[in-house]
Length: 596
Image (tube, rainbow, N blue to C red; front, side, top):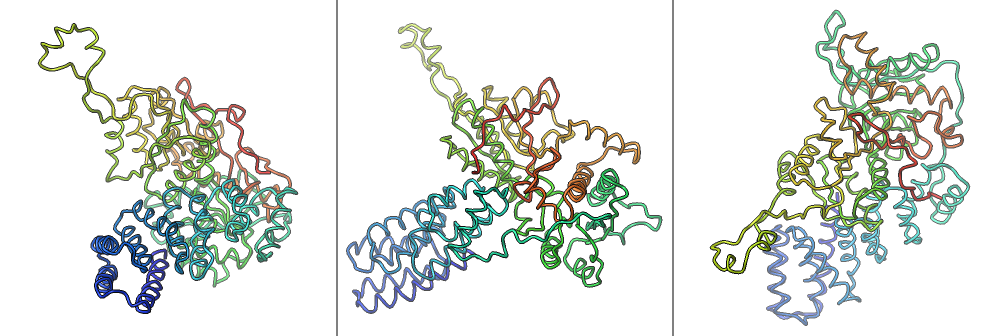
């Protein structure tokens, strides 16, 4: 989508630039070279186009049409992979040719690059300067997509810095709509809606909640029932079956007389769910657990909004699942919440303000890493580098942290006489880490791939220094998790409260499961159990549209926090002590900035 937007910008400038050049009658040499460079650009030969525009500008430094050549130079450089050079070209263009008619096109690129390199504040610095179409609409479309995933605290600061920017205000309004309806939040939200004439029906337009004598809950999972044996036994134990077994047990535990389940096989596409909906199979449901795969989830959003039907995703930690749908929920904390809590903790516990960030290849990993970086830099931490790690470059993590060069061992030289030094064929040498020992305070890891954490831990052991490790997600639920190594390295994690495997409830559930199925439960059994428990307890306590109750009366179970958002914000900070998982009390954490 972004490539199409910027291609449109280029086409407009091709036409505008061409007309301007024709109107001013440039020299034949300039015109010919300009056409050649543009032709290379149209053929996507960005490296050659870049060199052609450089040469053109060098030969015609005072030509009246250099703004166009500069613009296309920046565009070529960006697509050739030289993003920092492209930024410098666009920035110089805005400083040198402040009256150029197409200046907003350069600001649009600076906004895009700014977000890519430094985040929202850098992007808005340039976006706020855009005044003309079509660049203004393109900028707002870009920011709408990006700001939808920003931390509410970041949106608050952006709104304070750019109070006149409509897209910032609109994104902040959606974030406020998910917060506790305090008098200040309500007044501010109402002000934004009035000033920017936003559609009020999009905000807090929820049906009235009611308590019922009985609730019917749908369970929508890719069970592939047609693959079961005639006896009803499973051919293979899938994650969907684990989810179902957990959900069934939780509904019974919360109140076996209040809830009944209807189970639907959604498979992995939207067609089956659409078929069920057309048949009326979902009518009469009070809420739904699932579906879990992208296509059925997308269809469920349409059904949810059409029928005002609540659904809860039991496994994901991605805010993208919610899509600003007032009836959609996540059973687990989202990536931004976990990263926010991790940053809050490390702000008060880091040994120094230098940090490294490694993150995995999933979208939630990158969102968590970006959120953490923004929050830590706002607190004056220096993020030395942020590195994406996949299977193809995982080894680079260990190598990068342990890479060393040989330097003169001055400690040994101090013990040698001048005569010994003069007569030495080779001075004594030693290995010196490229990242000096104890120079980094901590490393933050955002990855669902446990091998990334393993690479980092191995490197720290090799280095032998005091780098702290902060991560998100439950590394301890892995069967090969080495508590001794984690304790020795001081590993600290931000996890969803319902992922804490050390609780008494987890132990009791494990025991019950083994008694019933004669095998240990997998993690998806617990995902299903606590997902259904969140749904059932919320309905039992606050009624059909339970989000109203959370907002007005707050949380009632420490494992579930839907007071401030539609993703479960109940988070723990945990570590290892005496080979046991230990929860760090919230009072030990640094104080989070107030939302008021």
